[in-house]
Amino acid sequence: MKEFALTKQYDYYAGHEQELLKKYNGTYLIITDDLMVFSFKDMEEAYIYGLKNFGAGNFLLQKCRQTR
Image (cartoon, rainbow, N blue to C red; front, side):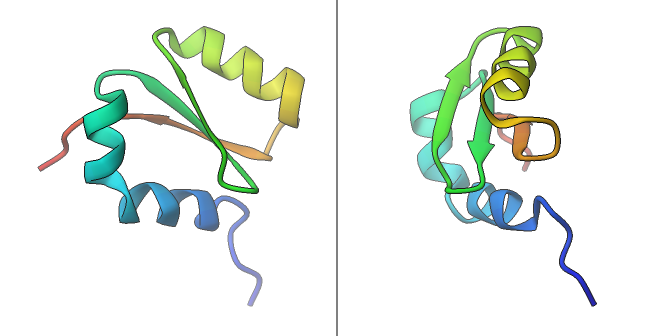
């Protein structure tokens, strides 16, 4: 069975959530295939950056916020 394309990026976010919250709380994160993290205040800006630099389907766009 093929792994979902963004599993690695989401697992990275979930595994580093507390660390990311301390640094990026309230922002939108782009997490790339090679697990680089970019932070943006605006979701549209983050999405456009991800598309231009990594291509559709090659990055995770995640709101960094406390979920629990």
